[in-house]
Length: 449
Ligand code: ADP
View 1 (spheres, helix red, strand yellow):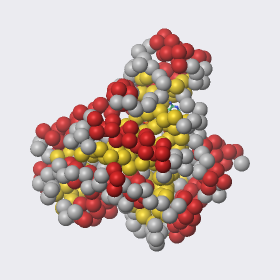
View 2: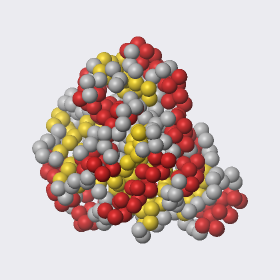
View 3: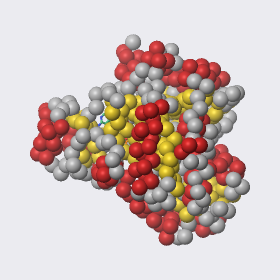
View 4: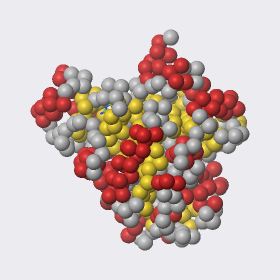
């Protein structure tokens, strides 16, 4: 087992990994920018090393600084968290070349799934159902028109290097296609330095259902059911729950097995998430994330497992600590992503948190790096806390969420908490009756009234 793990991340996810290390008796090393000298992950880790100035490109994304921090501290492994360098195959290669273990999949699998066209081709060949669309990249407008006529409008133009909802444009009809094609390409070029795009049938009212998989890198893999992440704003998840109100045990077992077999066949190592759109009883693969997800705690809650511990074990070449038959689903869990943002426009609003009080009690988990007096720096993601509740069933989880939100105090900065309180008054949410478009519609109606 590793002696010391360096966490190449910040905020709540850095704390999450430090906690797993401590329970496993492994020393932890935090890295931080000068803007994060007072951050909780710096205080909580066994050691901390400053790796650069505030901008991520010069600190959390700066590979030579992170490798140096590893060498200075003597860390034998790196946990990347999510975001930042977690899906950067070139980084993984550098880490391995320095004789350090990357806690995650191989650079080959990261590269394979990071390119969405290759990912889709691979999954299709492994028997995973995909969204109808172009065979590979679409080089020009003429090809795009031909493909779109073939699959039928509406279509969505997507960046093969895409992520975070960028480089994705909808064309409802042939007239929209030129603009969608050109803007998707230029957005993709600007955001990812790669303007290759592909086309997919645009699904009108799907849910976003993702399957958590875990492989040991030796050809064995399990699935841990689904998470429903349909509540999104600008293609970004806002609230996640598990199990999905739309999936029954038989469907879960079927799609779960398909996914576990697919990753087992490629010898996948570590945690992965296979994302689908789900409409009229059919699953359509959209992408695979080769890392821990922000919303992993809902899966941990219903299966009673520690996914970070499992990532560390598998990276240290230990076998999976659970077999498929050990994974029994218990109750219902919901996570809300609390951002430092001002409603109704979701404007980021960093600032000083005057008072912070976390909710507690049965079935409540708060993953956050906040403390009273903390200054939220303006340079990074606006996620400041994840509140996760677990109950025996969905109504109990909803009641618990309502109760926990009532206990939470974050004074001094605006947050997205009022949105969650409003959602808990909505009959559709209480019934679990929503698609990926529900939240956008709700927000635009709220703005009008
Ligand atoms: P990203 O990597 O940028 O997050 P994804 O491919 O995961 O992009 O898609 C993000 C979200 O965009 C999905 O959860 C869904 O809401 C929407 N989306 C993606 N593809 C389609 C599609 N073919 N039809 C309808 N909505 C889509």
